[in-house]
Image (tube, rainbow, N blue to C red; front, side, top):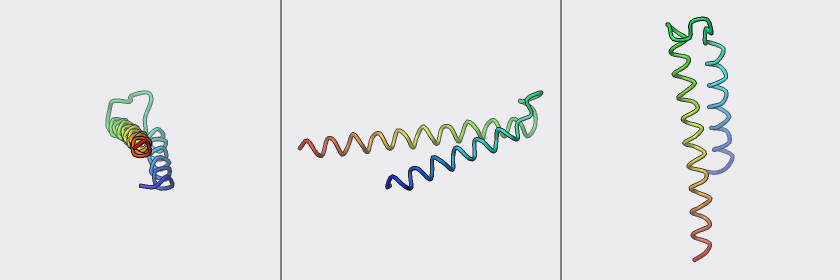
Length: 68
């Protein structure tokens, strides 16, 4: 996965999280569609964390292969 694709995926996940924030009813966030939006926010943030872990592991892999 190249750097451009990684950046696009992270931006898409950020956009999805931002969109879901607009759907949350802050007066009652654990009812109905607000709960689904909160789950969507959590999923988008998890996707971002996984993508960043993948990016870090690729950097480590390149350093290890370069030292050989």
